[in-house]
Amino acid sequence: MTYNIKDVFYLSTSATIDNSTANGGSAQLDLSAYIDPIARGRTKGTGLAVYKVHWSVMSASKSEPIDDAESGVMSYGLQAGAGIGDLVTGGIQVADDAYNFTNALLVGSGQFYGPKSQIANACTPVNMIEPGIQPSTEVPYVIVRDNVCMTYQVADNFVADAILSCRLEVAQISLDQATLNQLLRTQTV
Image (cartoon, rainbow, N blue to C red; front, top):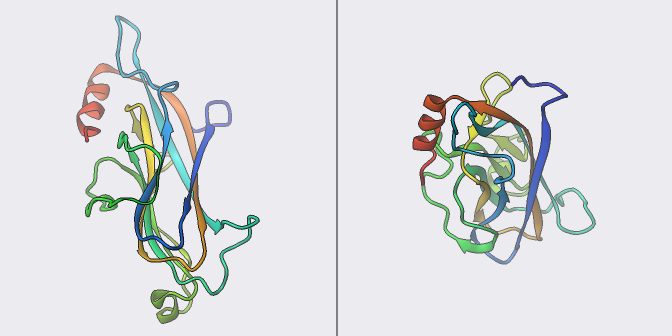
């Protein structure tokens, strides 16, 4: 499958980050309608190729941009097959290695620095959203598990509630048995 207008479609999710709470939260996307990890006879298994992940952090009030007084800091990512469901801020403590590039389940990640955070004030200029790892149109991340979870870990509490969201550019692809087996092994939690 190639990256083209005929095959690619969008999936998205979002989570509200509570300003009074630290630690992590998540939003889960059910992918069971797009994935069939079982090859039957001549029929190949099906995976979901993620070509791009677009990230946004907005104010939770009236779809406004983040206020210039925001000092919140967080890491965020998208993890294949995590299966942790929808959890509010403070609902989980994200694993220490969740956003490391060595995490085989990590589809995409990044960090957010509020305009008034210590990091943003120390660096001029600084982008509020710093991308980490991202899939590509040439080598997409192929998910063969029935879910993907957008997770986040708040390092410095936010001044106001915010919304973290992501949009995925994806396509269903057929997988030969050897590739499917390798992906199933690497995407085990």
